[in-house]
Length: 279
Image (cartoon, rainbow, N blue to C red; front, top):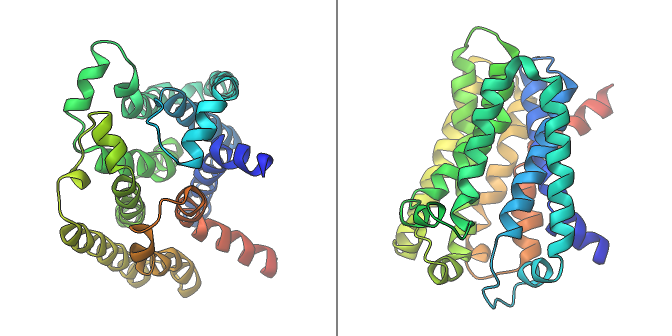
């Protein structure tokens, strides 16, 4: 159990998730990205999430993750230092793309910056009502837009459709997380849209996002994708269709940080399994 908690709560699992999503983008569009990009994304995600959770205050929650974080601050600091070291090494190997990598780093930093207990960062709590959209955008940028930009190809309309499809997969997941954390956010004086709308409105919003997810997937099928990539692309969306009811009732950390986070990398995993079977 301790090893599983380190794997999930120590942000290794979510870092692997990000890498697999980047590799999936790479394989779908035959980008042939440098391997250094994958390792950079892994260490950047590890850095960002370790930083975020290290700064997360004790909100007297019964959550297993909050308890784990409270008892493992030193380990989180070690993982943060490890992540920063990896980022610095692999950003050097990708030094031809420093501008976009620094832009990505700034995006991820500002998401957690409101947790820094000093001015001017504490004022960010007042203006991050759109943090759900912001987080979904950052994940979409890192896992789709970044590898496309670094590849240097001329922009293809297929890329835009895929970006929108990925965003509307991630955004509903973020909505569920924010609904679960609404009490903790209020205690920390963090405002977000989920905390001010009704459950009925949230449900409509959630399923509308999934509708857009399926629409953009069908557009990809119509203009570019073959049937099997299309099927594996929409599978996590079907799981999300049946996840809302239980998600708003439970605060299980494993449901959220293993199952829901894992849905984001379900398509990459299925894609790689299919490649192994057919190779």
